[in-house]
Image 1 (cartoon, rainbow, N blue to C red):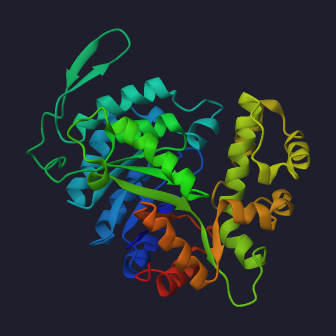
Image 2 (tube, rainbow, N blue to C red):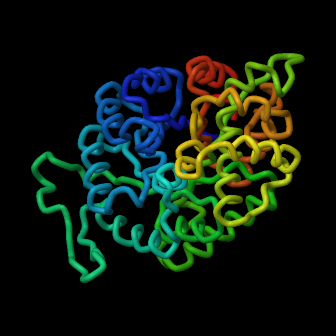
Image 3 (cartoon, rainbow, N blue to C red):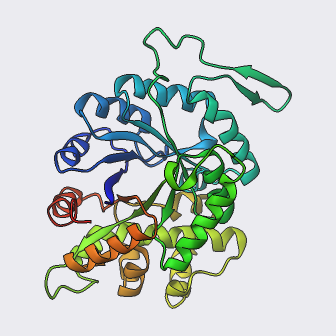
Length: 357
């Protein structure tokens, strides 16, 4: 059975959304970490830990480059003290959080080092930290006094949207966070990269000890409803446009061609952003990120873009597709609906999908 979780655009004024998700049967709440657009994820997690009883709570995902390993480990272990046994640590190299400050995500070699350093700290063990000039052995030295909790296991889930990061997930993680694969062939490729990284750890049984989670937005169509209806655009449009924003960053920084489903609209989209002053373009690209669609970008939300980036279909169609994903090895779905309709979306998913996959 696939577990359903939700990704939360960390909003400290609306932790009741997580409380409602728990009531509706969602298994996990992943708190986004993007300091220049949302609330602080660890502050939100602390409040959520006091308002919930059983839903798993963690970062979704924490950004490696904005805090050193010691700070991340202490922060999530503090949450584990408040919500023992239901805390997890999701982490990534930081695309949006870094790009929105005009900085690149953490490079793969540095990310590898970060994961190597943070992993022992997450279980209260000693870790060798490289500070650039020297290496120092560190550990949390007051673990028994109610400050932190390392006794209850804190699983680490690593965001992997490319072959190298997927290999790191296999090497260091208890699971990986991926985008929904368009085919079984792509899923096999994901698993091959994960297994390649896991092969470096002779004690890890990747098939038994690894959790695969996919991030997406879901809209359940009413009978006769079109994929590009206003309701679907409100629910899934922010996720779809986040994919466009990512593609624009790849094009702008690395001259990468956009994916096929964006090529038709690409010249017009470039024209829209060409009006933004270069010294502030990094602030504009991710505006509204996964919360809403800017008015000038609404025209780009067509059927092709929505279907290529989100999971949209009738109840029966979605149940069938999700069962297929489960047979491919997918364990969890993490949904991130638009901000305005989020309560309606999780209620509908609870009624129609949770427990049916």
